[in-house]
Length: 283
Ligand code: SF4
Image (cartoon, rainbow, N blue to C red; front, side, top):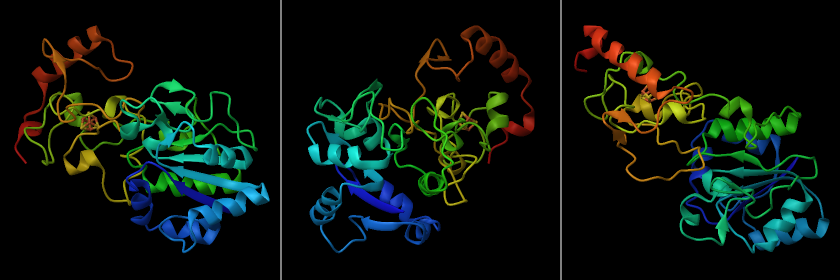
């Protein structure tokens, strides 16, 4: 299967994510890589001209946000069987699109559907843009999605994200869940104990990502390392004050998905009161 990887407005973080993975070689084994800015000797211009001349492309991967008048990217998307947007810039616009109306992701600009390709875009095989959000995306999500495309086993959610990787929350599988339940807060960043939701801005309970069930390189995640989930797979990333929980009268301004304010107040008060002493020990 032929794969063309193009970059636009990007820090190359998704390429770095992929290269730091022991699965990166799969891309070379399973795909005929027509071009990648970090691996190819030819120029992007030559590679793209060649593909456009042929009028056929199996997989296009775009890394980075795009300008809304980027006709070359549009043409590539029109002839591709599958279009994959990798990283939050390619999906939602992210940092490059902040305050710049003419910059977007491929099929979204933050929450708004449309982007460069428009709401109704479908690739040759009938898929919307396959969105691998994240800043960057976990390398397993990149390699896994490309392999699912090759094997014809792709299932997407309503935002075009593969369900296997974005169908759960970062909160699932976090090693701090017991602390969350008993409302035992971390005393400082970088420690093993305590939950980071109550003061340190953790967005695990409202972020669709599998960072704690598919660990990064099989080893770690932000919350395991003692820093909060920043919600980098969602359309409203980046946001200000990443290490702080906005609160009103001691209640987090944003509650875990599906939890009512009343339920939160009742349960968290009781939980805090009866929290086991062993959870309160210092690291
Ligand atoms: S640190 Fe974040 S992800 Fe982990 S239990 Fe607390 S809120 Fe959930």
